[in-house]
Each structure stands twice: as structure tokens, then as C-alpha cells.
Length: 436
Image (cartoon, rainbow, N blue to C red; front, side, top):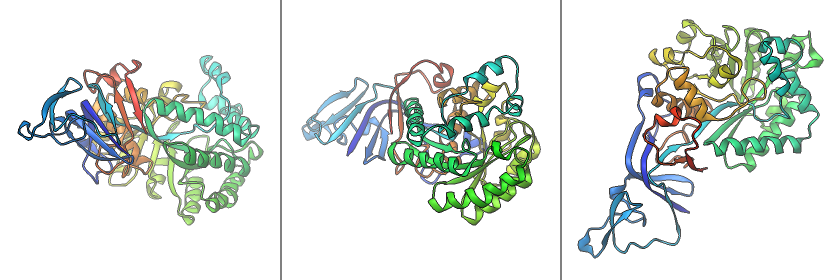
């Protein structure tokens, strides 16, 4: 199947083949083409450029001397064709002068969960902190209780509603973590639901085993034994069924120590499962350093980091990923994204969509928070939400930019004045169409 998108006001997010992430100064630029076209064949971008060389019939421009006639493409770009007729086997999409962008890639979510935690929302309003709610047996453990009592089919149904929601808001790839099971059976249940989403949803999905999200209720006061369970029972079964692309650990104050994290990552390495780390959300935990040591694809959260973390990441293949939706919802500091970029590092942004600390998967709002609260430029923030977040989930070779050979996961906007308008007017419904 061939699709031609024509009358594109601005085609944005163009990168050459082979660029997998943007670092430092390179994050300041978003390559664009004004008055553009884009061609998709069998779901892959095969051509794009200035519309003067391509028209809405799918034919290259033909001189008038060849017997053709001049007409306008959507009233914007004049072109010349032999007949002005359209081929029946081609789909034509008129972008009507809007932007065409790569879809957002959300590299950190927990969208497979049961029910919600709106009761804790009242606790937060009353002044309780995330740590205080967790210490009272709430938080992640509440979600684990709800999930335990929810069937796999119902968990899939609820989770697919969230997948459809984020797709409608422009997300074309998502990483989904387990971590609300906290028993062997329930962690496997979560990962099987994620596998089912992979198989049935058009969106690109990566699965992350996060058995070390918290200590299960049955192991309260026996954290070392719970780490044994993760290493000796959960990981072997996850690997046997091929359920996880990555393994994760919540390495932070009140959760898992650097030593426990290292033990889990060493066990995961025996099965060839690459790590990603929750680090420095609550305290400077050492999670960044242990993640870099074990070759983590990303270290995520980073609300509380120092220059030592910037130095640890320098020269590594690990993507620092910040979650401004969590900072917004919990009132935490925002990550030092600007400092990381000025130090020559890459930065990714993701939603952290989960029921307790960031109950939203709206990556456009994440992009806006990157600008409004983290002082990123619109260009830096878009790159952080597309190519760099694609890298953070291991899919930047196929997604995250307008590049020939990549999947055509695209956002088409209504006509808007500039790239900056996307985060500036972040609640205005500007998305005309999402192509997955």
C-alpha cells in the first residue's frame, strides 16, 4: 500500500539515516522542510521533500511542454502533471498546511495496572508525601493488591484503553513496565498482558520487567529474601517465556540499594536482558552510577542529581531520561535537563504514566513541561520526546524521526504558526490525525 501526504506546511524532525540520538549542541536543532510531501509504502517512509518536485497525483512534476496542465496542491503548492488524475491504488492525505512530525516515543510507563489510586490523590492534597503514603502501606502496594484481584483479561481490557488514549495523543511507541505484581504469578500476569498488547496493538511496544519496584507485602521486613525471589524465581521464568526486553530496578531511598540493584542486574545479564534503572527520584541514590556500570540503556527520573551523575554519564551509551509529569504531580524538583545538554549529553523525556505519581500519558504535555519548567527550547524538548526517547527504549533505528526507511508513525497537525506553538498552547486540540 502506498500513501502520499501532500500539502504539508512544515515537515519537521528530519534526520539522516544512522543517527540514533542527539547530544549536547545537536539537540538545539530540528531540521524542517516547508511546503513538503512525504511518501509511505507498506508502513515505511520511502520519500519526502519539497512539494515543488512532487504533486498530489503521486507523479513527479512534468513540464507543460509534455502536454500536462498546471494545478494547485491543496491551494498551497503549484505542481504540473500529465493529466491531474490520481492512481486508484494510492491513498492521498491532504495535510491542509499543517505540520507533519514523528510520533512521540514514550520510553517510561506503567500503563498496565488495575483500577486507580484516586484515594491517595486526597492524601497528597492533605499534605502526605509519596514516601509517607508508601510507608503506610499504600502506593505501589495498593496497585499490587488491585492487580492481584483482577483477571488477566480485565487487566488487558483496562490497559488497552490507555494504549488507545496515548495513541490518540500522538504516541507511536511505548515501553511498559511490570512492577505491580510483586509475586511470581502476578509479575508474569503483567508481562503476559504486555505481550498481548504487543501482539494486538499497532503501536510499537517494549516490555520491561520491574519485579524490584517495591518489596511485596509477604516479604515486608525481609527485603533480602525478596531480592532472592526476584533473582532466583522471577527472572528465570521471565527469561524462559521471553517476556521482557529489559529489566529495571527502583534504586532509591526506601526501595532497593545499590548492592541489591547490582545483584539483580548481574543475574539479568546471565539471561542477556539489558537493564534500565529508576534512579534519584527521592534522593541521590547511586542508581545512575550502578546503571552506567552495568550498561543500562537508560537511567530514569533524575529529579535529584549532582554533577557527579553528569560525569558518570559522560561517554556512556546510557540515556538520561527525565519524567517531568512526575515532578508536576508530586511537586518534586524538575530534572537538570539544561545542565545535561550544556555538558554535551543527550536527554530524553517520558511520561511515567502510572496511577500513583503521574496519571497521564500525554507526551505533548511532557514536551510543554520540558519547555515551561525545565527551560528547554521547543527544539530540545521535541528531540527529547522523539529521537532520544526512541533511543531510550531501543527503537531509534526504526522510529523517532523523519528518515527514509523508518516506520511512518506520524502526527499531522491542524495549521499552526510554528513548532513553538505545540508546547506553548499545549491544551489546544491541534492534532488532526495520527498515523501508526
